[in-house]
Image (cartoon, rainbow, N blue to C red; front, top):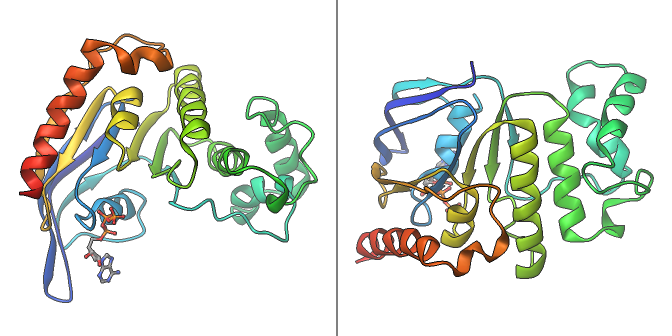
Length: 240
Ligand SMILES: Nc1ncnc2c1ncn2[C@@H]1O[C@H](COP(=O)(O)OP(=O)(O)OP(=O)(O)O)[C@@H](O)[C@H]1O
């Protein structure tokens, strides 16, 4: 089951409350974004979903996940192929088999011909796709994406958002994504969870009832703008 269930989650660090009772669910196959003020505990929640940290109290139920952290964390001295096999090798898969599995995904991820390149020889978008390939090849149903496109320029970012939507439609993952970009959240998501300022609670959940596949120009429609405005309004009220 790839359902995510988070209930009454609390966490403090050094006596300072960071999470003050966080509740949300994510249904199998749903794409949900999490936005909120800086330092509101988004990465802390993801660490718990990934099993890297434990809550002080509350319940976290999530299937085994593939976690793609904020920066791509590719090793500069390894080739792209050897970077993408890393997750499988760590889990004990023989190198040959790991390479076969990763190589099969290279065309889909737009990385054909770059197997032997080093990360420094690739664009930011390609590095992100390589990091995503390394994540996806591990075969988990739940994708945790922490600001996957934060380091990219706006044009590459738009291209990558469209690409991610296509991948998600094809593979049917359950996806949770942290982003600071309201437009990115609306474009990609079925639902957006807005966290309050620290200590975090879920302030609002906003559904995005826009049809798929979504053309990048959907951002210019009144329906898109209405969802964007609702989110903007919640976030501005948190800040003041
Ligand atoms: N291991 C830790 N030890 C101490 N404090 C921590 C630890 N992890 C997180 N924090 C603190 O908890 C708070 C929430 O951090 P977190 O990284 O979850 O926020 P965030 O919403 O992801 O932030 P941003 O949007 O800036 O990435 C911050 O004040 C941070 O300093």
